[in-house]
Image (tube, rainbow, N blue to C red):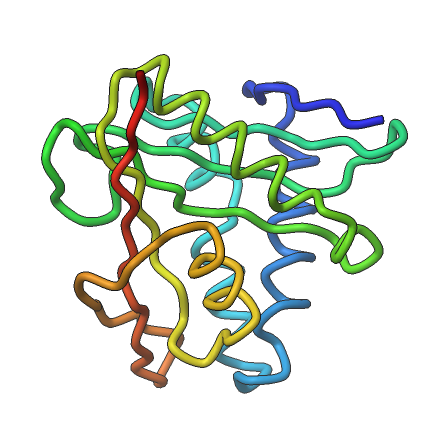
Length: 173
């Protein structure tokens, strides 16, 4: 059974823990330990996550599979988006799952949830960034109908990396 629940400030500790765990599991092998630790300490410290949780244009969601916290999603609109985008865009900034919950179809279900939120918010596009070397994620997003429209730099310590920006036009009737 799948459950999706919106996070609030009471979820700060759990959000911090799953954010650090899933980011490191996803990108740790491709970055130096020092760069990874510096990034985790900067991006997922209590102050940074509190600001993100308090932003009215951002929303975090926990996803539970069989009553266990499996992953999370972060959506942004308007000025909370990580890149300047038109008002009719919704960003999936983060979508991560713990290793034990990957390849269970949960990503597709969470993506469908993001589409539902886009429809409720009357957005015409959904977009995200994906690391140029994260081929499994790129394949998933291509399957979901995303197309590359730009790229930006992502700095991880002393490593300058490239994220591809992908978008999908939404056709709600």
